[in-house]
Structures are given as structure tokens and as C-alpha cells.
Image (tube, rainbow, N blue to C red; front, side, top):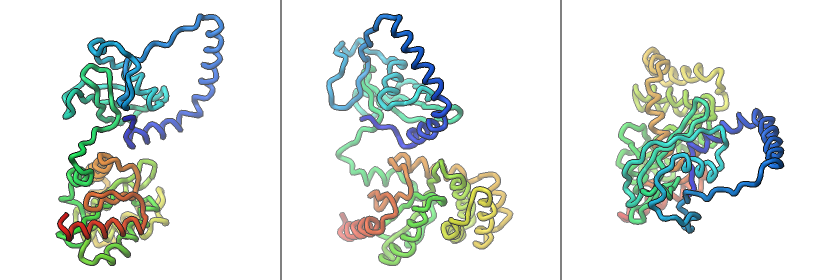
Length: 329
């Protein structure tokens, strides 16, 4: 498996764009120096790789496994080349710990760019020779059941009946135009096409490149701390007025939406200014990332995932989930 999580990929991509212009002249000079050195120095044979990615192919290094203890530098070099990480991305590894996969340990890999960093676990064979940047899947466990286990819905706001046969969990971003379409699709189509059969659950997933989405999610959660009704009033207002909101007027728009929802304004402002609900927003985002969700909107329908605001795909998924629920399968 040669996969990097969406969070790490986004970190590397965004930082890479910022560094690209600054590195051009440096790269040109380095290339010239390398060319000059090549004329003077004899050609060196490239070292044999000490690690092999788990991808179903034979390892390039045929030495006995016992001769391959964990070499963190070799691992970092191999990871860098495998997923083409630029030089300015720093790679650090923790210490191996037991995993649920026989013959493999887990090791934390931290990628950092300037002050930003992100970590994820990497599977490494006990002899240090093989590693996987992805996850191992158990064919005896359905992906839909894995997703259901990962989601914590106890305190999440919802619309519809609490015991509805179909639960639609929407991971959304108040600044995302496709999420605005997803909101209208759920409100105007799904809840009306399947009356009394759907529970619509909100989860926040503000994307890092949106400049006011996270603050909007914090504000909505502050409204939720007063009541679900007030949360949904703020939720709807933010989506309905999405095109009017900009970074410079966002806070005023949040307060305007909260006031229209009838919140206790002092409590709301205190909650917002202290970012008391930021951890809830972060937990929702981390939950989404744990399921491989890297964009919004994303819908989990009785465990089945549907990405994007596609009316037909969402309708069909809800209809299928309802049919299965009624059959008890």
C-alpha cells in the first residue's frame, strides 16, 4: 500500500506551493554545482535499497531479514522517495509498538513543514524491512460497520426522528458551495421524499484552505450548546447567506445569525470568543479523516459513504438503506 492520508497530503501540498517559487533559484544553482562535480568525480554506484514497500512484489534486497533492523534514516529516505516528498518536509519516526497485525508493529510518522505538522501510524515489519503507508483491511468486517463504529453521534445535532430507520450523517463546511447544495438537497429533497424515515445528523469538517469555515463551525456549536433548535437556525442562516459572508465580515454575520435564532447573546459571544467548542469541531474533523474522508460534503448513510452533493446518488443510497432496514439486512 502506498497511500498518504488526506491530512498529510494537504499539509505537504499547501506548503509545497508556498515554497516552490523560493526554491527555483536554489535548485538551479544546485543543478549547476552537481554538473560541475560530475565532471571531476568518478561515477558512484547507487546503494541497494534496504527497505521494500508492501505491494505484492519481491523485495529488491535479497539479504536475510535478520540483517535488516529498523533504520529510521533509511525508512525516512524510502518514504520520501516513494511518495515524492520535497526536501523541506521533515520526517520523524517514533518508537515501534505492537499492532493488531501479526508480524507488524506500528510506528508514528510525523511530517512537518515550518510550524505545521501532522502524524499518522505506519505499519513496519518486525525485522524493519517492509512497511505500509496505508491500513490493513479485514475482509470479515464490512466497511459500513467499521464506519458506524468510528462515529460518535451521542451529542451531534440532528433533524428527524431519533429512531428513524435511516441515519444520514453529513460532514460539512459552511464555506463550501457544494456543502450549501448538500444542505438544500437534504432539507428540500431527502427529508421530504422519505418523511419520518430519515435522521439527518450534522458533523463539522471545515477545510483548511477556507478562511472562515472553522470559525463558523465554532459559532454553530456555540448555538448548539444552548439548544438544538438554535443550532439549526444558525446552521440554516449561515448556509442561506453563504454568498454574503467574507472573512472581514464573518464574525458580524455569525452574531447576526445567532441573534435571529434567539440565543442568549452574552453566553454566545463568550463561547465564541473563547472558542469553547473548537475541540468538538476538531473531533468531528478527525473522525472524518479516520474514515478516509478528504472533501466535503460527505454523507454516511447507515454506514455507506456517498461523496458530493449528487441528488441521484444520495437518493438511491437512502432508498437502498431504507429497503435493507425494512428487510432487516
